[in-house]
Length: 310
Image (cartoon, rainbow, N blue to C red):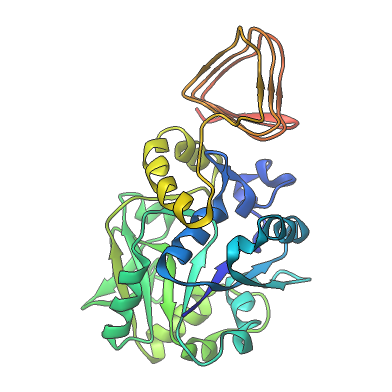
């Protein structure tokens, strides 16, 4: 089975953090977020990947090249005009062929068992299977209407009245029939492909009951690095086995003055923390300079700026 990684978005909700770095390369515990996705794919035995890119496309290309594609076959689909999740997938229809494939986001951190997701789909008889995750924040994020083992609605957009505590968790196994419902222009896969399967065929679901974290907002990004760091460190052990890279709190390539305080914080590559600085419960992204005497608590620092998460 091949995989399609969605990695073309602007990361608008993460601005200004994503002003100079595409979201797939934003580090979570000093490991680019897309690495967690690649590790899961390799762990599942998937070695052929199509990855769509647009925003800072060259930086993503260079990252793959510098890491020898992590010993995977990675095909890049570069969109000169961004096509969205639906149009981006439709553009690669011929590359994915006539077999089922795994669709996965590049900005989720999850300890999913993708092998079980694939097997569940193969025995379900459905044209697609979405991985769902239960959360009390479902209504805010976008809840999924389910009934009788099927997905029947998204945010009640099909007016079924079905609501739940489940969200789409960023991974799915899809049959090639989904391409009948996708548009070639800019579009959302939810509005086209997923609703097409609901209306004309059948769309099932697989419940993920482990750890799940997205990094779509500064708050959730901070939470991933600080509040949920132990979950991610455990997941990082699996990543290290697959791609030879592991998450870590303090980069060995950062310069930290002796008389600074760094407590429960992430310090990135090529950072410089000057004398007398106090950094607590904060994330300092690569290349950031923290000036002498600076006091930070519950913040995200990046070259050129800082954000408070309070």
